[in-house]
Image (cartoon, rainbow, N blue to C red):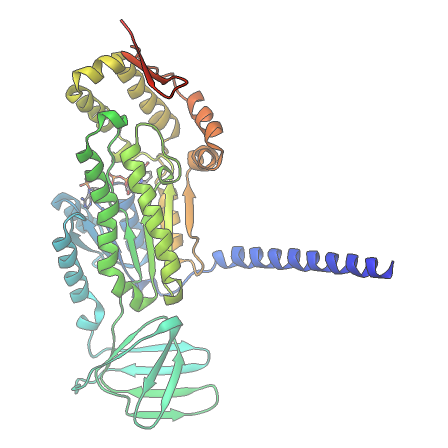
Length: 435
Ligand SMILES: NC(=O)c1ccc[n+]([C@@H]2O[C@H](COP(=O)([O-])OP(=O)(O)OC[C@H]3O[C@@H](n4cnc5c(N)ncnc54)[C@H](OP(=O)(O)O)[C@@H]3O)[C@@H](O)[C@H]2O)c1
């Protein structure tokens, strides 16, 4: 009897301890979500696809908040529009993310414009846990030494002493070794270093550039699929790999614009969904690989928002072009009614009902991912994403499919397929022809 009571108390105590631990963990995470990093004006961020939509509004907001922004645009007009209204902290760069050479040229531009190359001779202070480091530059450098900063620690070595300072998650480029070191008390150490210049990397990389193609699988060419993936996926990976060394220097952030279409693959958006599922897969692996290097990776998953991608005329134009180019046999099979209903479903369901004009919600998510001390791995943004699409991705396939079927008008083929194919008991294919 006593043994049973002991066992019972042990189980209860374990359960209680687990609940307390879980609650503590959740509260701690939620609490830390509201804490933000400081010194935006010292942070450098690269953002792709700033001609329009989320990219443009985010560039404006980051500039307003005081970040140093490298805003890449596909067009000259996009660059001019941003240059006209932003502060001098924002610099525009022409960049087509499908062009590897342009990405490398953009890296060159960014490196030239990071402050170590422009602000030599200035001095900076850092205060952390009672340690004060005075760092200033003297231009008598003849020796270079790279000091890495894994997990926010960096060590400064000189002939006399080795001091480990917990400063920020930075790395320093040292032109000459420290010459003087004095410990004033247990808590305060002053280190005077000559020839040391602070070489920041990039605090943030925001992969935003993207395009969409729509239409049924049979209507889209392989080229359509490749074009979408070139921009949304391979371009994003290329940009990330090229700028990763600079991000690692700062233990910075990578923020990838995926989509709720990267969680649930919707009909007539397969090429787009494939690219966004790829972005999700890439981001998950990247987040797990870079955690130990202090780099945080977040994915933004918006539902539908009113930008050029969801612009009615653009969508109608894409459908019209697909229909005009469609193989006559497929045209006959699908029928004009299917085409019309599909276009109207997309415009009514996706644009009129779902697409939100409040782009600031996505911008807020990006800014949080960039500046919160503990950013989320995923940001699902928009009522449609939270109430509808994410559930379709979680529900068992038959339930999710049924739910999708209930939305919009039926897009049955107006003509039956001319041949209906089944297998008989001997596993032979039987074709039934229709007149
Ligand atoms: N709007 C939505 O409902 C929604 C939902 C989920 C996810 N997203 C994602 O959000 C991101 C931004 O899209 P958006 O909605 O803001 O649409 P958008 O206004 O069309 O913005 C896309 C941006 O990417 C640029 N771009 C296109 N191809 C490029 C290339 N090869 N190289 C560099 N830049 C290129 C565009 O330049 P041009 O303007 O010069 O073409 C434009 O600035 C995309 O990744 C998109 O997939 C959008």
